[in-house]
Amino acid sequence: MKAENIKIGGIIQKRNLAKIGILAIPDRPGVAGAVFSALGARGINCPFIVHTIDLDNLDSIVLAVSRQQLDEALEVLETVKTTVGARNVVYEEAVGMIAIFGPHFGDRPGISGIMFSALASAEINILAISTSISSLSCLIVASRMDDAIEALKQAFAQP
Image 1 (cartoon, rainbow, N blue to C red):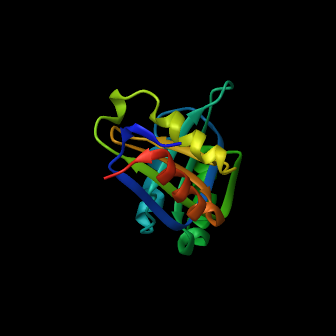
Image 2 (tube, rainbow, N blue to C red):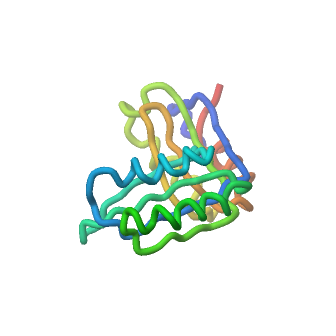
Image 3 (cartoon, rainbow, N blue to C red):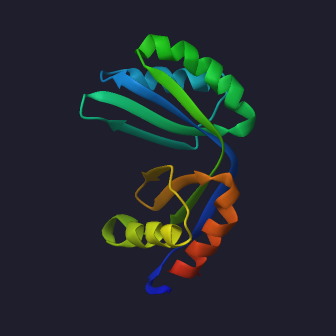
């Protein structure tokens, strides 16, 4: 079922990613700066970032890096883990990022529901979600990328 009244600018995909979680970090200023400065100093880009705070006031950061840079990123983050006081660093080797984009997403209710329902209908689990003013992105297991693209093509009107 296509949401004919919801037109998107298109679908973006990024393959060959790995997901990393830096978990249970005491909440304080400078944590994100320490994490991303250390990765950046080693030339590691993070095309996907999510930060949350749990009920115990502990931060978690989920990010994606190129699968080819996973080992190096984990090495960097093991050092940063001590600096920021994180309890654990976890990872998943084979993920992809899929996103939809379009103008005024922030002013149009229901877009995220349509996207995530379409993925659920295809039995695709969402590993992490991130948004911007004009896009909605999520990480999924790499083996389901083609299915996710097809589900989104069916769910939205496109140019």
